[in-house]
Amino acid sequence: QEQLVESGGGLVQAGGSLRLSCLASGYIFDLYAMGWFRQAPGKEREFVAAINWSGGSSKYADAAKGRFTISRANAKNTLYLQMNSLEPEDTAVYYCARRISYAGVWSAGGMDAWGQGTLVTVSS
Image 1 (cartoon, one colour):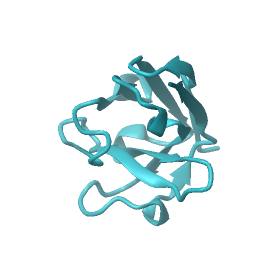
Image 2 (cartoon, helix red, strand yellow; image 1 turned 180 degrees about the vertical axis):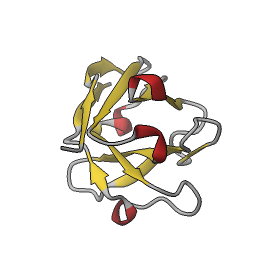
Image 3 (cartoon, helix red, strand yellow; image 1 turned 180 degrees about the horizontal axis):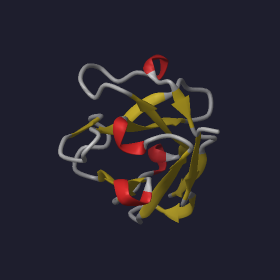
Image 4 (spheres, one colour; image 1 turned 120 degrees about the vertical axis):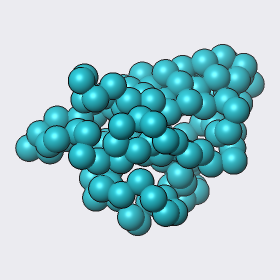
């Protein structure tokens, strides 16, 4: 059974940091590009960051640039998102997702598997 399971969310004060993890199982992890998305209450799910199969290339939404870092450990079947300088506007459920191709635009409709999400709450 193919699964993506996120962890690492929680409550943090503005300016703080969190590291999210996404453990993949049931498929060959390094065949896929991976991404992080988030969904705030009342808003659509939006792209945060993506990384190619090897970890050698990554891309970020403007809101994440300079503050968030996506990485992966293929030997551990794990995707990470290091989030620094968190702001209340970063409060959302964060999801990891996969697709075969890294190239092109990353949108929620283009992913073929999702995790269940982990809640990040940033207090002011």
